[in-house]
Length: 423
Image (cartoon, rainbow, N blue to C red):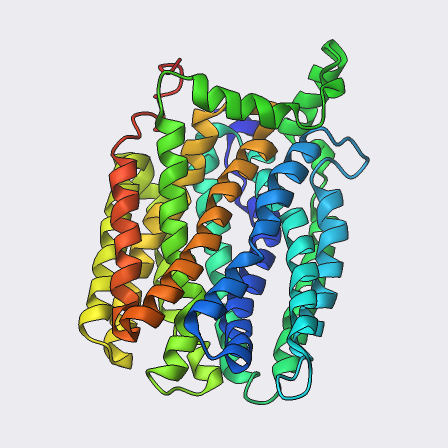
């Protein structure tokens, strides 16, 4: 095997730090900000609305900036400049969110901080993942994304531990600790990653020399990918994007409202309520690497189907036995299923779309599907809970995963060896 084709675990760990930052932040954000909003609003539906409505920002920002990053050429590369700007500003407003006091501060101030934080987090999210296919060749991308999700699960676990141990002492202290970790991770990436050495960046530089490809409009690659999806005879790309949207709606409904459910129904304190989802993250963490191996052996599509069914089973278990211990067991089951899904869907999308120079744009479409689901899921699930009652929380979520399974059945391509078959 060519030396450049070997999987570089050491490099991949450093590449994954940007994604680690995203998951660390958002896990803590959903656990704690939803409780603050509930103190203002007292409604699952309204909390879901305000948590979800700001996901309009990444829907707009991520595909556009992802496409622009494909055309970016700097001495720091085409992805890293966005992390260099986005991470420090996000960290600042992350801390400011924690300073809001529902008993004395107006709701609009909290919402303002949330808007600015979401914008700058969105400005580097896709780039933090697109770094991986820029460095890692297609044969190793399932392994690479498994490592990314391994690090992401560590981020989730760390967020829950900070919630459990630091939030009871000081909410601001918890937010500040995460902000410090964000900046430290950025420094490590700058020290260890030379993006200009990536094979993807070198390839695009060579393409620039051969033709004036960099003078396409900044959104040309976005238009090309969307056009490709709809003109292709095979509709696997549409089906995978629909499945991503559906399971994201269910998952973000769970993340956005679970800590409210835990304080309201299970009567847990704020710290433990924001920690219970750690069991989903722990099982996800333990299964990330095995999931990558399993997907390589039995195929990505089959692995995703198994994952969706497993997550459904976990939610049904939580629905039937709504006590803290039984919910922990259900979340562990769901975490196993989630690892089987998430690691492989974006890899299938990279394979289905003409990646190469446009991996940022392909990743942007992946996040577009996620954040459309992240808008609709919490709002819809929240208002259904207000109407039907909290006992239906997990059952409602489970239905989104069954709908995603139905969509996956229409994905015919995307496993290794499939590429070249589709028109």
